[in-house]
Image 1 (cartoon, rainbow, N blue to C red):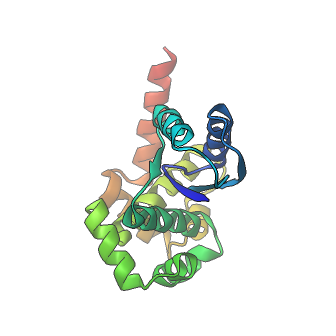
Image 2 (image 1 turned 180 degrees about the vertical axis):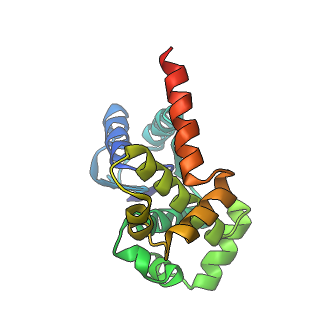
Length: 184
């Protein structure tokens, strides 16, 4: 039986959910971002115990179909943002290919459940990825713009400032100042 799990966004999340399944004595065959394949004979008592463990770690089992659809869309967007080959393709086509539901339906359900559009979520995730890459300090702004699918550094900078209130350079400066304050 497949269960959907909210807030799984990285490999560490997958490892945490595997640990929690073992802790709840639930047999599983596969755990991926946003879902786990568990034994069909898992009792409700074990599922309730697992729910408590999930909540303790900031996760949640998704029980209604629309919320499961939204979570699939979020995972698709994350994959699209962080995959250099995918971020050059049309977002709506990629989501449709990943989720298999008409994009108009996906968009309507997402907006109703999240209170924001898929496009706004996408831009937020893209900027979070840019912030991460800036903090690594390994790439130039031009390389980051290319890697994240922006057509130019100017476009990246405008969108970054509209979302964060800072230019990428200002963000790095304030970010470093905050880090230094934490070291005191």
